[in-house]
Image 1 (cartoon, helix red, strand yellow):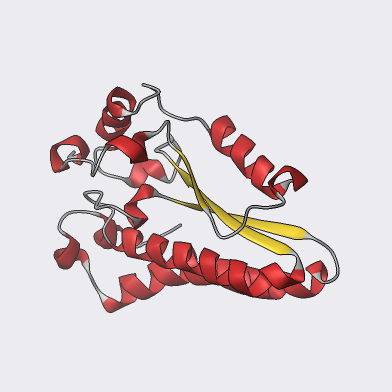
Image 2: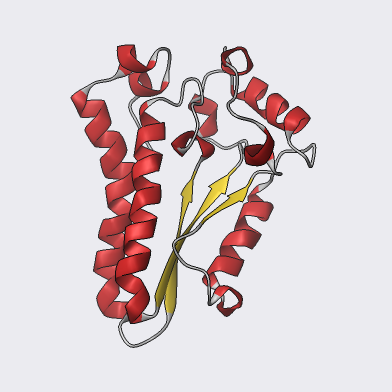
Length: 174
């Protein structure tokens, strides 16, 4: 995932530009569909699975996520369309919507530490998820154990998405 800094800080409209919108969608959504198209010849005649990563900001307003929220919503729609297109060929397509995890990419999000704290305090499991949690779910979705699952967005966020409507602006400010 990627968007120019001005597109993921401050007010949504102030940071909105055609170029930032294009870049965010190209990197965060189109690239997955293009990868699926390129991989199709290699996957013909065998079962397979594709998994991508998304985020709650595709569904709900997350202060400062801005243009990335639009790009992730586009990615989630791509998952559904790809699942419908590739399913008859025996290829499953799903996404994992991970909760906030301390990563290099996350360090660019203003007030990320406050977001981590807010999610930990408000998720049913009262903890943040780890890269291992996300990896385990991705491994499941890629395995034959998930042979009947396609076109789904699987949340790995300690249940945060089920109990909280949106992260308040005060929880995400610098």
